Length: 504
Image: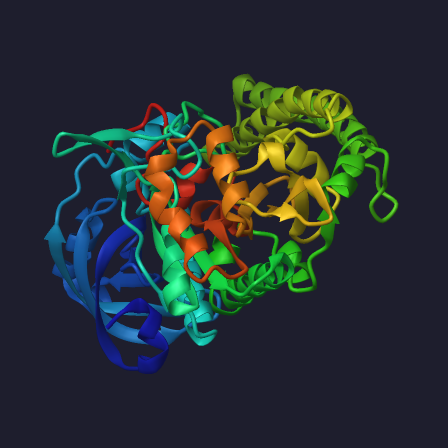
């Protein structure tokens, strides 16, 4: 029996197999929080129900040791999952001595070095279950819409957007690259199947350690024949809302476990605002308000709040540390104070980071040069004003990929679209309508200093039955990071690979 199935066996005897995620010992009683991957259950061991031997074994079980517990399932709304197990038998399976991840606060680097064990924590368990649900909902959406899943190669002989951020490898004596996108191949497959999507790993060799960068991540890349940019945006919105709705419906306990405020997810089920690049720039520079809010003005207010809160946190930390140092405080109170101090110090670190970043965001927004692409801070400034993802389209063609179609009404712009998640999370989707004019496409390939010969097969798609078509790429980890409200992409994937991190 799995923990998530306990509702089927209320008032009956059952057996659970799992690991000890927490344990509390009282006089003649042991409370074990058992986890089995599907959930958590409090298991109560007493001499009366499990015998003297069973109680002794339970007392000796250590954190993350594995065990098989048999007992009677009792409904209890106060407990995790609404049920607990009154144990009649305890069978140890695997020891766990000196488990390295304790209850105290650990630094991020330490936890990343212990990623193979950190995955067992309640928070990481919840994030990975949400990741699983998002993956399921993506497949469900496209399959129900009549798309065909296809696979693009990971080894490629040419770059999709230039070679500066590609990992090069040897392919039987020839240079090859790990794919940074399956999009070009997706276009070929769409010309055969009509509507397709790919779902696979992609690689970017960017030496960046920001919270938005991974060197290995997963991309979902649909391509649709006979779609223009506006139909493309409709598809993006439909997919994102299907994901959000599915997670809200099927992962309420996981969202609660990680403390996610779901109000912004719920508000994202309405139609997404669609802004041209020009409108987005005016909002960024504080020249245009959104629902009475000004981007730069709201940042200045936020900075003032951060500075005041920092003073309050410092005072609270000092007060609690002084009480501990003065002595005469009971052990339970010391533990409570210390736990609060650890929490306040983490809040202080976050506030200090905001205090450093916000002035830079304001400066960058004010000095933004029209015609440039948006950086991470620019996306943050804009999206803080919205309570749902926004779509920014019609970008200056000079800052976008060579394969995007020019706006027929103004060749200075490309029919690209970026979807920016709210709360400062920024880009989660990039896409657009593809160029169908053979000569214009050739010009752009040369302009980007890419070898024309390597793209002859791609140009064939324009020579033989070309049609208007569009597509986009969703970064899975960026989507997970926003939905879960994470601070860094590294928690959104089981084993992150990024600049400076190749193990475990």
